[in-house]
Amino acid sequence: MRRVLLVGLVGALALTSAAVSARPTVTIVGIRGYRDPATHIELRVLAGRISPARGGERVTVLEKECGAPEPYHVGGRIRTAADGTWVYRQLGRNTQYRARWRRARSRPLFVLRFPLYLETETSAATPRMLTVETTTAGQDLTRRPVELQSRVTGPTGVRWVRIATARFRRAVPRTRFRAGLRLPVGELTLRVHVPATTAAPCYLPYSMEPFRAPSATPQVTIAASVASGGRGLVLSGSIPTRAAGQPILIWQRACGSGEHAWRSIVAFETGETTRTTAGGAWRWPYPDRRLDAPLSFRAAWGLAYSRSVLVRAPLETVVRRRGRVLRVVIDTTFTGQRLDRRVVELQRRAGSGWTRAGSAVLRGAGGRRYTAAFTIRPRQTLRVFMPATSAAPCYLATATRSVHS
Image (tube, rainbow, N blue to C red):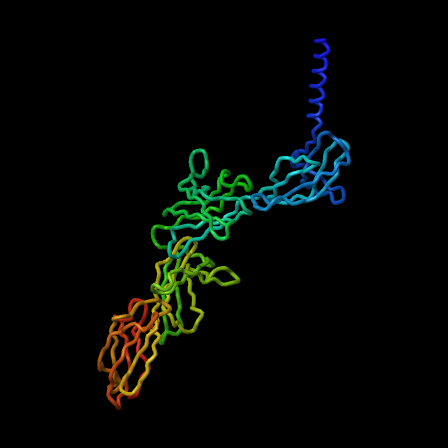
């Protein structure tokens, strides 16, 4: 009796083992080379198999962009060969694949990963701060490191040494990430590098093209010349190299507290403002014939920036006479410069010149508008004058149009 029970137990275990081994599975083996018989072009295909091996079975390939929050979608359907193998030829880049057969699903596989490409820029306001940005399909890079490396030449050859690290933070939109690296100064060759731990699992590590570190002293000069009457602003300067054709980028921003951001002036066709001529000199005429707002300018040659130069402009004024009262209104909305309690003068024509006839203090008139009023005498030619000490720092000394009382 005991022998019969033992034989029955062994048979039950064998049936259970056979049932387990017969459970359908689908596997992605990997990427294989494939030569198209029609075009003889070498292609890369996704290869897999099913178990138990059967021919003519339909396998569904699911795909999505790596890191994307969206669910998998059907990429295509194929049939297995007699030995249970299958091949999927419609491969994309940076794509994540899974295979489905009956109720079985394979593990995901990443295919043809791209490097995690970067964009960098510096600002005229902070030329030693390098902003690094990248965009993913959905992979979260928050707090992942990006490195600043310096090239070192030694007995064993050239190698790159990490000298600074920054961590990505999320920007806008949510798939964009940004980090800031402070650049050292001196005779250094630098590059920005994304390590494999940052790029994984969807991307490959990436190193940007090497570049020179900023110089400890300004390497770009700039000067501004304005023709009489404020017409015809020309910026000019030079760079240390005497080579012609070097790209120069001009940055500008408004004077005062109303606008702090530096903005580059870029030609649409070339992506730069101007180029150097023989001897390393450059020249750039301001496109508007008249400069009617105070602006600061800087010139950039690669990561080398010039000092800033301020080009002042006259104030925007309106003068009105009503009876024996002459009122002036001054608007500084563009710069945001405050003029309350600044002194303005009433001037009277005397021969071929002007003489002071009185003064008043400006007061606010709403927003960045300021006003002052004068009591005037009849039969005079008058104007209101804003002296340089009152117009500073953004504006030039300004006289209004003349008014006859």
